[in-house]
Each structure stands twice: as structure tokens, then as C-alpha cells.
Image 1 (cartoon, one colour):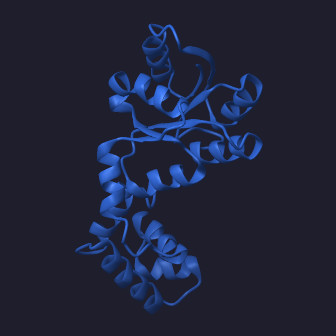
Image 2: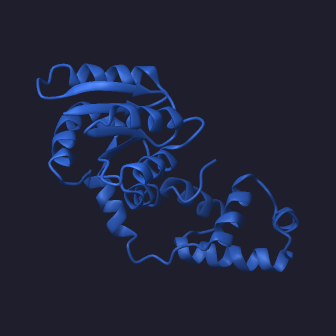
Length: 203
């Protein structure tokens, strides 16, 4: 099995190389330090499995997965990440990732994950799967609600958010009320905390 690793942290790439070098049936054929390099390296080397970080410069992991699968629809990709949030995981899986592996579990889970997805399976770690299941029936935030929440997360008042988005302050208040309700939050600060944890917004 030929493997590509795309991550902007050298220590992580070294860690992956160290885990894989002891496996006689797995070879690390290419490394990339950002999303754009990941796409180029994938198209050049055509690995059996690509390990892709979500947060990378120039092009993030989701964009890289989209670009790779646009060229190679059956590409087998595993996301390596520190993010347990259900929304982040759902975005990755919808983009076509076959696996979702938390970096903290890499040493114990990486080889088995590579083998499983290479054989045509899918692998999502139990704690991430639990997050996905817990929010399966949730009422998703609209794009406008996400814009409002993102602005609030930057410390903006309702008045400032209204100016930014070209709406009235009353409209912003109405959006915030729905956001708090949908996320099961106590207040706007709690709503921001939940949204960051779940991967709905990033700061």
C-alpha cells in the first residue's frame, strides 16, 4: 500500500513515517506541507491512501479532498485532525473522506485505519461517531446564522454585526435567539463556545 501524508507540521509527518516504516506492506511514497502540494503530490504519485490534515496553509484539507476527488473520483482519503466536532467531521465525510482519525490516536489506530480504508471500508473513531449521532437530528444553522455567529465570536456587538451584514439590529437579535435555541445554548457566549467545539465556526 502506497501512502501520501499531507500536513504542515514536520513532527507529525515524521511521526507518520516512523509508524509506517515498520510495516512491510505499507510504503510512504510522498509528503506535502500544504493543501496545494497535497493535490499535486496525489496526482503525481497516485497513492493507494492519502492522509490529509484539515488545517493547512494555501488550501485546507476539505478543499484539497474536493480537488483530488474531482480528478480521481475513487481516491481513498483519511482525514488526520485534532477536531472532534461533528460538523467538521460531516464536512470531511461529505467531501469523500473514507476515514476520520484523531491525531492523538494515530500511533495506535493509523495502520489499521489505512488497511481498512484500502480494503474498501470506512473508519470513524467512536468518539467522533458519537458526536455525529448526537447531533443527527439537530436543526442546522442557516448560512446567515453562521455569519452572525462568526461576527459575534469576533467580539462584535449586535449593532456592529448589523452594520457588517447590512441588516437591522432587531434582525440580528432574532437570528441570535434562533441560534441559541438551535444549539441548546444558555446565551450568546455559550452559543459561540458550542459552535467552535462542533466545528460550525472557526476563530
